[in-house]
Image (cartoon, rainbow, N blue to C red; front, side, top):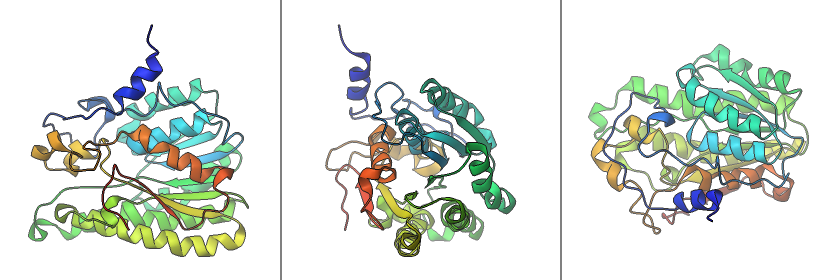
Length: 296
């Protein structure tokens, strides 16, 4: 008799060739073909985050959902931030978290709304009775083939969500996260090996990498560790909701050294490690989870 968890883990490492598909931005995991693997059946925790409290932006699907599941299985209470239109995905993820026996709080809103993002950290800390971990993960990615077609409005929206929100959330987090806490930012392979059709997205990811190092130097003085994770091509709702050209989806991630796209469950352990006491001497570092793409 086979182990369902083992089967799921193997499935998460298969090479996928998604059919051409498109969803309106921001996309839903429930409508993806094939579905992404967030570790719902395969991730097993070892109490590495027991008693900790985390706020995760973009926690409804993709990497954020996988991180939320992993954190919960490791014993952390979690506050999920996501767009209201992503509520159906968030409720699915929350059920997995609740089954892990941890506290789950929903904090939907739009990070482009300054009132929402300026109050988000305090709301999470109030809901969870404190805050130990901030995961700045929410992102906006729209593929545009030519700079001539890349509008100022899109550039501003991408920077607003991807990097400006990180300044606001991190500023607030440093007021409530105590010594031994952690801030983890999601950058990307695009910061180091940018694609020309993701010009604005890649620019924000480069900014996040430098922001991480600068913030890490400041935050270390109060005992808070700041690090980043740089995923490569990971199968998430960003991709079929205009994050990639539709015709490129069947070969998404096939140019990595492993010859395939990664699944969100393959990225989440990096966040667990950086949030845990096992990473107590890691500050200003970037963990690359990219299937073998070029990196510094």
